Image 1 (cartoon, rainbow, N blue to C red):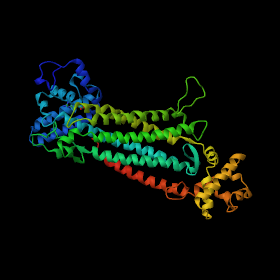
Image 2: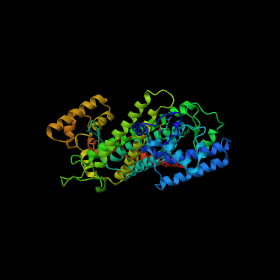
Image 3: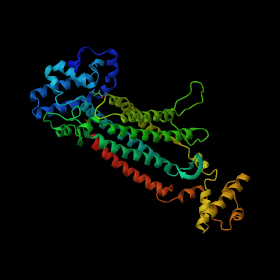
Image 4: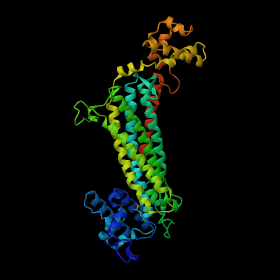
Length: 471
Ligand code: ARG
């Protein structure tokens, strides 16, 4: 096969080298963006008088035919043509004749691949943003539905203080809201137009970069041509965003896996979201959560891989950078899958409220409240802590709970106890009383849910502006 760059070579490429250097097996995903970018480029070349209007028309019609052929599954991608850019350009010339060769005027594959990846990531960011909002909505509505369910909150995976289950879920909402904010940042730095950088130094032709940016609805231009073709920060930022989001989903997965176990029995997943065992007939396994937890590893790996690839690269383009794509594509697929399946899983999850409440009443999760009671009567917190600690030890030795103690027993530990101590250390009181801003009281969580709904509305409105820019 004759290469588009064959002129200076005296012999053909080794087949192994062809296979090794080729990226068509994965970068064919960029075909829509590649064609959209080429059409915008051809229009600009004609508008600037660099090619004839009729030539641009022939090129654009040819590109549209190729697009239709690819979408109809009627296009053969050739490994020997290396990548998506040359596969399309070569076919264009075969179809429309030598005029097809004018398309690559004032352009290099270096700025072309950058343009394609920016366009592609912009499209995927809009889609991922939507899925992220869906998951946030599922978390928020599940929290609202179980607004008053009490569970033990944990530190060190030991029961610590009673909390609302909805408060716990809203912590995930807050984490996901930060993920969305990070996605916004990625969008801003992806919404920049690199074409016109040429190989690295710009071009001798009187091009109009702003026109291409406008055609493709970009928010701005890369200012420096070398940076435009060397930059992979936007991909790194996306991978970092994705890795953090996957870590959030992995932590939620870990909790759900624990909560589904017979030891906890806090939630039950819908049968549709679990799988069985080929040997143990009784098993219902939380495989989805385990896989999401597991897949966080590969996304973190993709971030590490690209950081490592980039760290030693001199400016400008180096072929190493072709390695940016597989990790990016796999991250996009993994993230979309994980977000979609999780929104459904969380929404359908059954909550065992009595079991959670029972657990919250065990293991002295109300001991801090006992100490706080004394502090409110004037005892310094450190002494109150000591009194509550001794009471706990007393109960442990007798197999009692703090709420089993008589007033006489309470008074053995401190004369400051009155009959109202029992009400003060009831699990419900422990929750209601934590009414500080951002705390677990029903009033605070209700406020958080209301603010969350509003924030979600803002996110969806922003996503609309993103979707309108997708090519
Ligand atoms: N397939 C290449 C990539 O993905 C396109 C850019 C190639 N440029 C070059 N001069 N080899 O990075």
